[in-house]
Length: 118
Length: 113
Image (cartoon, rainbow over all chains, first blue to last red; front, side, top):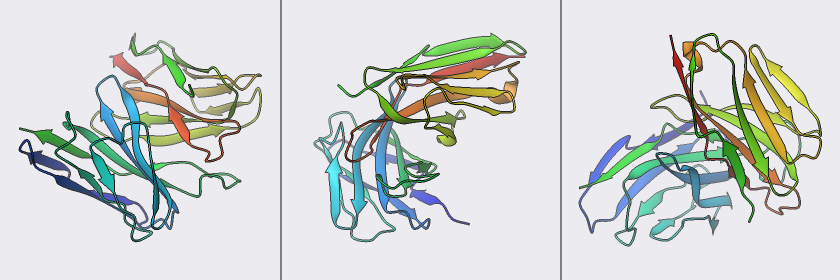
């Protein structure tokens, strides 16, 4: 079955440590995204990528980094510079952002990774 | 800025009552999408509206896109406990070169049996 796999599901980290969240999709989607979700805050975009080896900052990119070396993979690193990293992180993918037709730009989400900083 | 506002933030209803959540944008949207996130789960796509004044139905759910394409609503008739979750709208602003989605903050629906 096609879908998006995020790992780990739960992660605990000490302050000052970097941590990398994995996101893999086999939907053959060109675009991939990382969102952060906090209670009452909705979904806030961290980074997104339309094509391999290219990505753009979203609304809250500070303290995060990404790479897009393969179409299927879009890992997110939460660095020690992120002041409040405890949150639920969601990865998503879609067809090309500017493509037309039914289903274009519809997001498929992974199950999420819950990061807790101790 | 390019934001999508959504109200109410929380809604508590008794099973069988109706529920409505509203989204509003200050700029014209090229389309709007609705997602549902069950407690402990991830957002799942429900529907996309593209045309001005469009109305779509999915069983007890009715989705509307305003004539000016600046607002949208989701109405659930006779809620059931299975409707519990957070409902998000997400819009693409017309003229946005990247077609990026902007999410509302969501409406968290609680249904009492």
